[in-house]
Image (cartoon, rainbow over all chains, first blue to last red; front, side, top):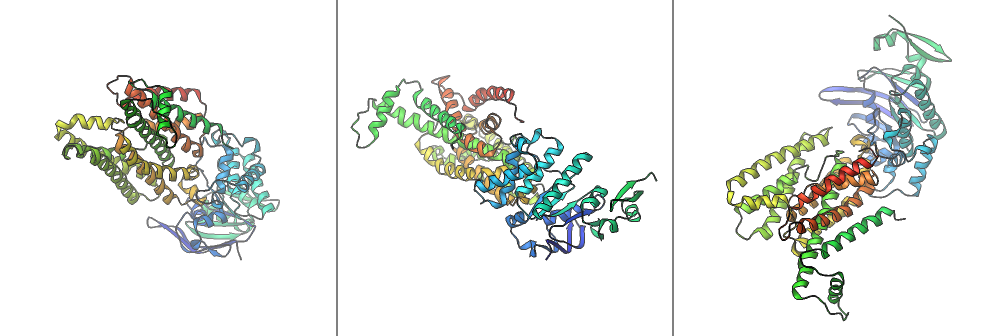
Length: 256
Length: 337
């Protein structure tokens, strides 16, 4: 049984098909990168998985139909790190991470000892312990991204969705964040589905990549298999050279 | 463990209540008031030192007015904090979705067309109905246009409804110039008519709304990360917002129906708490409730003593004291506004 299984999933908005009969599956503990140009439908697919978007077709989480799960149940299965999180600047890092416990608490309950412990562990693992009392507005871009991931981790969900997790980070912090996520994945057996912009990084971290264009799956498989010079040229309109980089493809832009 | 701010808030409420009962044109001492309170208890053999007139001043004029002020202030501040959280808008106040305009229209219609002497019961009822209907209308319109950006459309729908109702209210008011004065003094707000009857009238609404809102204080923190993320955390955003707006409106409508439109409390008290104590709604809601009560009771003391025996409209006092104090807090705190 797959952790995530899309079967002929279609999403329409305003008469336009954002996602068109998409089928693919993600195995337990895998890291799958969703690739494709802007507007291809990557974010929409993640939002479907997070239970934020109506769709036709079938989506299964751990074998159970997504549309039959309640909102809280979905939130216990899937943690979503959006591309541009809404940041309540005055909120402390600790309180923010505690919000991740929401699906595990009664609707009107207060955080219990277990919730505080889970948040403390998440803070510790993302090296945010010393920043716990700082307001979010005072964090740097990399620290903020770690806080958002810590909140997702506190959610204790087996499936982690990342929407362009590295967009606003410099190359060092990009690497740091992705390494962290990969460590957490290996340690906890998390399943990671990440929409990525940066092809080389996507190839390095994604065991499999799914290439999407205009709402359809164009190709899927290992990065080396999917990311060819011709595909990238036709899809992105970019002139690139794909070189081997320790067994994973590195995409190098060339002057046309 | 009870945090220190809880004691401070309780202290503020107590001080305000005592000041409210003690201060007035007729000088009645603390000891005498306390003894008259004991005299009212069964089984205790204590004689009240107060004359019949003094007794009436304390128990039938000052105390109900103080209690009413506390209820209204608590409700307005709590509702303001809730609106600010639900709409993620620091400028939101309890009147955002048309409570003021609806209540104003209801009151104006009764004052202008109602039978003489109907003000007592009919006026609060009409103001309450007008307020609730206005917000319900705004909610229905907002939701029908809603879609993805519900909060923005809801606010715009509120502005639309408020503008329309204000137009109707002004029309009615200008057509009946003989009652102009009465309408104005109602719109400016005040606790002049406050008696035990008014307290009994609004206490159930204020009590119920406050209880529900306080229970949702964590949900308001979750809403701070936006509708989408709140949903992805498992919160039923639409239902939560409906419950919060509904209760805040119900309580505000009840408060407004007996006090008229008192500005400033609903916007300044929650911000004061947020800036001076903590930005979490888990702290903002209970503290706004307590400090709103204390603030309005004290403002009323000022309103009825400064020009005694005449009274200042209480809204003048809340703004005159509140605005400079708020500016001071803004300057001296370092939290992000």
